[in-house]
Length: 214
Image (cartoon, rainbow, N blue to C red):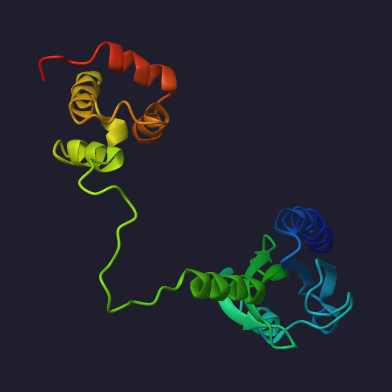
């Protein structure tokens, strides 16, 4: 295969990757395919266009640097960038070489993170609380044992995650929950199953076979 045919094949296969990435990360990620053999008209494909560039547009400064230096990094991942209108972006650039070690193409991903940053800011504002000088209230019945706290304390005393408890330990735990009056609470089986990583039926099994002497 000639060098030109190999490079054309590389561009053709890279185009498939661009299509797949664009569909996967739509609509917040622009995916661009550059033909580095033609820097003045390097853009041969642009999907989820966020930058306003067009096919036939020139290579970026980074692209020109990659063309000029065969030792340029093959991949630059998650570096800060911005679109022409000022929106913040997170970019990744992947250079593709032929069998002679020359950069032929680049796949670039430019994710619009301004929207995500806005959501993060909104959530931070929404969840912000303001301390008060008055007495602090607790939204729970006073002096009542707590199912989750009991289970976590039990597992912690054995240096385990609740999901890693053995069958014998789970039976012992059920006895402790029973003694604390926690098994009669509404939704107790569902909550215990969630914390132990089991099903309601498995919880009923441990209830029926709990260690009555513990």
